[in-house]
Length: 149
Ligand code: DAT
Ligand code: MG
Image (cartoon, rainbow, N blue to C red; front, side, top):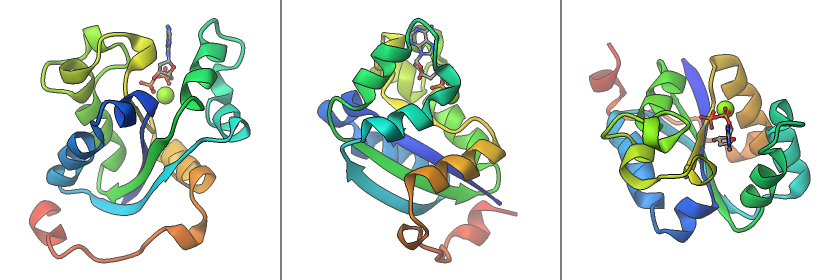
């Protein structure tokens, strides 16, 4: 069982794509464990993207993430990390497979709408960074047995 962090970035919220993106992951069969709309504090953005510090796009990336509200979600299930990344598509939207969120709705890499954790380890760490324990709901989905073998 994995938990992964999914962010609808400011462009996704501004463009009215929250429901579209959430719905694709929800219909995949994963279990929603946490959800909130928030203006990201710069310190959180810097912690979240610490691995990219020093890269040419880093400052622009931080400015973009803090520029307007994001929707943060935690999703749980077997292979949740891989399943969400697959729904989102490759980082660069023009290289993302057709049918993915980034290919269907985005063009520029710096406006790629979403973030998804890239490993089970990072999923656990990012969910703990973005959500307090009290914000995570441990509930049993009635459909779980029909999604997971
Ligand atoms: P992902 O978001 O697919 O995990 P990443 O972790 O490599 O991709 O990079 C984080 C974000 O930084 C990415 O969603 C968009 C931005 N980014 C990455 N590489 C970039 C580049 N070469 N130019 C501009 N922005 C970039
Ligand atoms: Mg990443």
